[in-house]
Image (cartoon, rainbow, N blue to C red; front, top):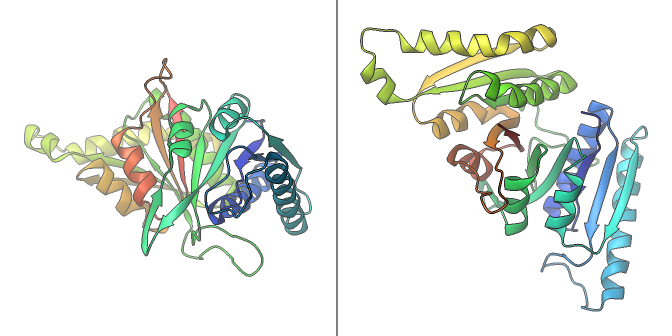
Length: 288
């Protein structure tokens, strides 16, 4: 991946946290960062008068302020800004054609580690051709400025492997790259449904699934020999197994199928559950 990391910045606390996460990711991956603000798509809680000129001025000031803070903290960051008139979802999807990843902010929901995903976030997450990361406001896994370091116990990149084989390769490439950039452990998670145990009483399905998972991981472990890997195979619903495995994650990676039609953009149940309940940033990686 050589395209930029693009983050949607609307002035909300969640988008500011997302910008800090995106900046760290861009530095770690040696990629440029683009801060994008749509002056026609601003959150309702931003105190702005309705005139277009005032909205554009707010957008410019927001981008300038965020750029100054990020560059002060990351002196080697290659950063550019874009103030656009196109709706945010349209602008982000367009940038997603050439970006390494998109980064979106999402409001945290009370004391529960969950996301409140708006229509823009869901639309982009379901349609963009590149990996997209959702970051909630106040996420303890994110370094968000001076005096706000990431929680020390968030030290794993967790990747859900629903279908071992070639389908999982885009997820594993993204997850291994993220773990290598952070110097983190990778935890590859595979859920074994209860129904499969009942149908295979004379076999050892857990051992079989562990072997399948090891086979899927083998080429990536060879490519990233310095990344420690934990194989996590557990019996239960895929959503619950992934949520449990992500307790100490600094990033959780899930997949969604690419869709040929822009009319069918919905996320699968595992991705949807992860985005709403996993207590760390969540990357959604499209695959065939």
